[in-house]
Length: 365
Image 1 (spheres, rainbow, N blue to C red):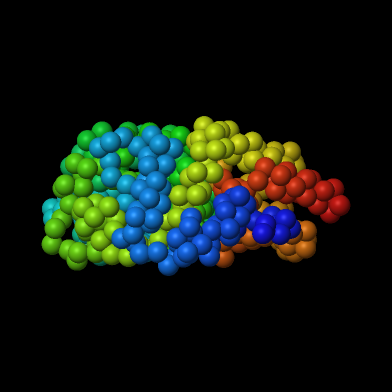
Image 2: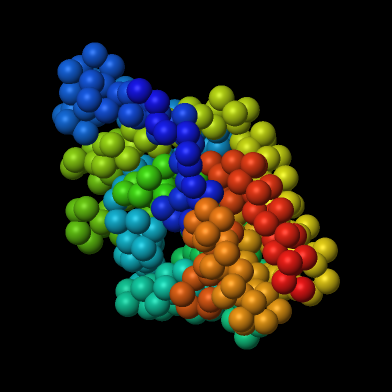
């Protein structure tokens, strides 16, 4: 049985759209997973049937992101928010400091958590300009003996994204890539640790991917709770305790879909085209739509903007909802409008929204 073809234009910031083919396959396998007579949710995480799912997901991620052999791939729980604590617990050694580049609400939250475990400071911040941009590399002020430098690669609330990552040399670079991982090629070797919640580009909520360089892992603190040690999960192939098996299964199927689409280069090309549709509608509106992010910092995943008048904006959001566009309201902390164009959001949805923007302006000018 196929899913109904009537689908919403899903622009939610997360959990976000999933590929329809992945949902249909999950539907077919839900009751009897590959002849086991059980759902994947019912399989033992120690079983051979699940082991294949688990290891294939890791293998696919390695292939798609070109992850070097000297990196571990972990599947954890607790979302990116738990990583805000786990990172300093593991890597902020006594007598060291951690440098945080402040580009939005999530870097603020990560910084706040780190201060509970040791000394942290802001290496740069664009808060005074309402987080409209990403700091220039030469504006970053960090020290060569820092424990690490932390960045947030894409900022869902403000719609900004690092176009090029800083080269921090011998200082370990850590990145929260929750909202743009797998959206474009990255050089994993630039980073000591990458983490990402799955619910934007990788799958459903409940799984957190961690990519960690082995020599960095070896430097971790040991006097912390067992479940909060990266080494616990590394030594046990992320199977120390029961992992979120269904989420990992779905993540693996999303990665299969990405491979069939042509891999990360094809995905990046499509994402550029999708975002351009909406940015073009903003830029050609002569100030009717006002983008939040500076042009050189614009996100390909989260497009944020306001209308020139508050009442018009309310009307726009209400009409967008009536037209079947879901998740267009901006984050509750800043308001406005936000269109999240993650990997699984079809080009046709972005085209439909771009056309709606043009039409709304003509009818309400």
